[in-house]
Length: 106
Length: 106
DNA sequence: ATAAAATATGTCATATTAGACATATTGTCA
DNA sequence: TGACAATATGTCTAATATGACATATTTTAT
Image (cartoon, rainbow over all chains, first blue to last red):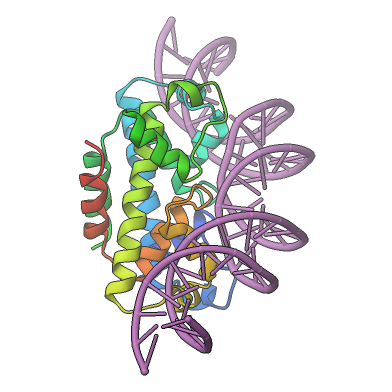
């Protein structure tokens, strides 16, 4: 993992809080983060495609605009569960979600 | 969704706690649950394939045997995050995970 | 340029999920 | 059968994610 990637992830709030901060993240941690970032991208893409504001979609999923903003920003305080539930609420199919997950990371 | 499927899910602790309990679950809720159940299955499958006991794998992912048991049982107290992290720890690729997600639900 | 709408960021209490532990149940093999 | 390893279930406290809200920043339209 190159320094730029690492910096980008840390800028989103991702960090282990251990000595590894200085050495880099473990491969599986990076895959987990990258997968979430990939999902956050299609949430935004799909929301915009369907013409919702964050406020509107937030209401639809019984959440809040601020949380949705964090979700789309790929912040670490948002769970995969909420992201997947959001995608389902948007009507995105398992197949489409799988496609995104498959393409992200090698 | 037929009654048997509903009963099976509720037996795993899944319920909304609302009037919907009596009417059934929403489509997107069912997809969320079914997706987690599908992932729980490959966690067990992959663990056994690699010859780990729950105790051993739990240690590897810094969790506990009991949580892993719940995870493999597809209980609702286990997050998607933990399941995905576990799969990554087992070395399962994004492509394989995607394949499972793709096949589960239509 | 400026007003309005949309999005981003920070904080908080509450709710949910976490690992740990005890104990029950199941499976396996002599 | 009995003994032992593996797995399941229930319950704690601590850690983390949650929606809500206030407010800052950015984008859009005029």
